[in-house]
Length: 180
Image 1 (tube, one colour):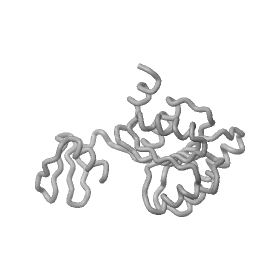
Image 2 (cartoon, rainbow, N blue to C red; image 1 turned 135 degrees about the vertical axis):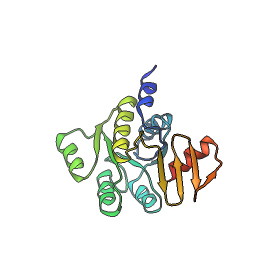
Image 3 (cartoon, rainbow, N blue to C red; image 1 turned 90 degrees about the vertical axis):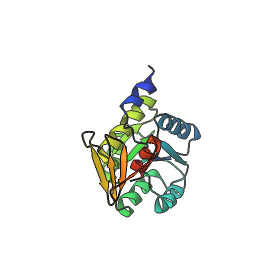
Image 4 (cartoon, rainbow, N blue to C red; image 1 turned 45 degrees about the horizontal axis):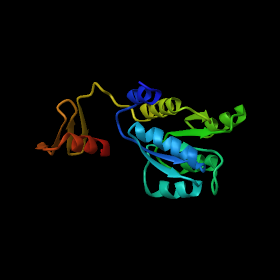
């Protein structure tokens, strides 16, 4: 089993939407390919202002930010996220800036984790997985989840809507659960 396969098995089984901000196409491709191979959906951005524009309209489960990007630097994006979004969005900084003062300033500004480039795929996956587990805890012992009129039986993998069983394929069940 190679490094990516080993890391993939330790990741959460839920598909997450991850925004990747980096102006280096090679780094963006590396991050997106690594995270996509683990089952996540990546949305690449090369400018901070464009990412913020999207954050105003859509949601992401995690942000992966580089510091030095055009338009609006990663630290400015982080500041905007912490001041403007009502929910806590996990943020991982992945940048070439390696001074202790850089790391501490981003963590103190609200980043949840910080890694210095170059980073291996295995380490990137491990850090992302760790942040996602903390931000979106999932109790594997739970046998049902209820969202208003929708009751998900996790063991039987069935959904009831207002008490009536809804016939879904396994893929539809997983998608419905993910969306809720």
